[in-house]
Image (cartoon, rainbow, N blue to C red):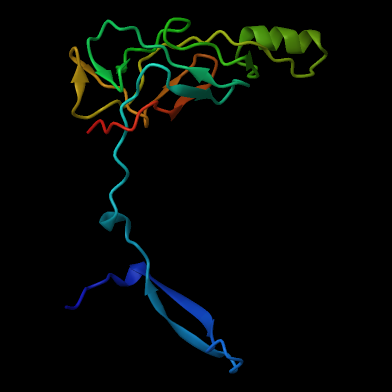
Length: 171
């Protein structure tokens, strides 16, 4: 059977070859197929549940996602999250200290310290839901939250999910 491989997926290589018994190594050259992105679909997004780990680009500590058991859906015996589980201090806990000057508390403390960056306690402000969420799975008419989703803090932080808390596929 012959497999057709697009030319843009081929990578030249050079390797040393020997018989392992002291014979001189000869140089062999050839072409090895490189995986084409179209042939390898991306990993399936995972469903996010209560206790998932979060990271903010402007926070100094990780945080956890709290999902209230009002959705009536669960995975691994924990409530499953939706894209609307983005309420600060209810769903999204603080990320320790905030280090962005876009945060007025950090800007004021930094100005008072003669320009030396002075992180202040994180108080996330999340103006919009998580995005993109699951393309197919919904919970109570809301998109299920997947580990490839992100949301933004008003103080320029980008919040991402580092551990969804389960291995359940959402698609």
